[in-house]
Image (cartoon, rainbow, N blue to C red; front, side, top):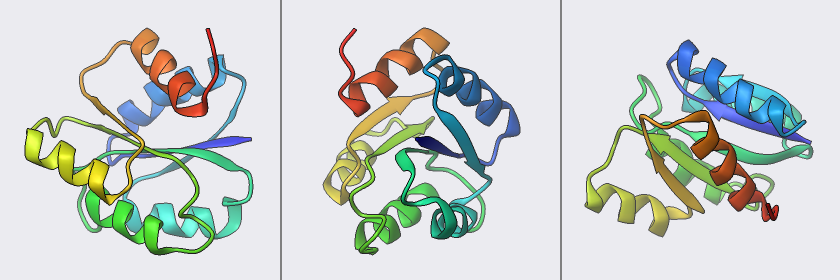
Length: 124
């Protein structure tokens, strides 16, 4: 079972990798929305969660979310927005587009682990 982190920041992806590995899941990463769609072409059957940044060059997180939810194979994978984008309108927009959860940066590793567990329906 794999978790995909989509963020243009290698540092953020490294932090997320740490949380994912604590939970004993395999880690996938992409630097933008278009790369995420390419990764999923190969890995979608084993991907159980996508952590998606909003503000990225090229295809941003919102555009990627919309594309994911239109794709027959990818649409059932839960998506959690993990972003500095904290405007209420954008949070609502992401949830309406199909995001399961929304987490704003900065966050602690403990908060991230807890949110990932919530997204996956894992009790504490």
